Image (cartoon, rainbow, N blue to C red; front, side, top):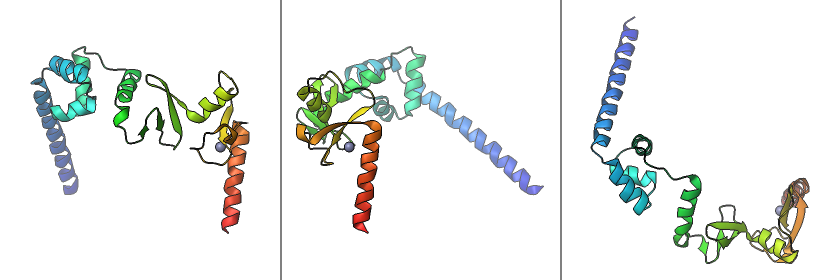
Length: 177
Ligand SMILES: [Zn+2]
């Protein structure tokens, strides 16, 4: 029975400790004028909730909750994305009017904050199409995602495209054996 007593006491102490931390946290964020933080850092300097949380020495959730509590407007995902695009030129993957995404595909800038895969852009332009039909994808014949010349592009249905890629993978594995 002794064991249980210790366990019970430690849990109790832990809960009290958490309560203490929470109280201190609230005290800390209560001294902050969230309206000024919102106006100066969030609106004027366009910092993110995360960046503000570091400056205010509290959690990101805390900044978020305090903004809500003070009825301060929080950016929508779309607005946040546009802010990211403003700084795109400083991005290591930025290459002038095009940008390479994390999957290694070239994105082409077609307006402020608007991007389209260069392969799709070239295909649509060449065949004078408005958009790629539903369920179809643009395949790179030489499997090089950076080669977006028109003779390297082919429109395939999504299922045929998957089959083709699986086949290629299988062929590669055979050659390796
Ligand atoms: Zn493909």
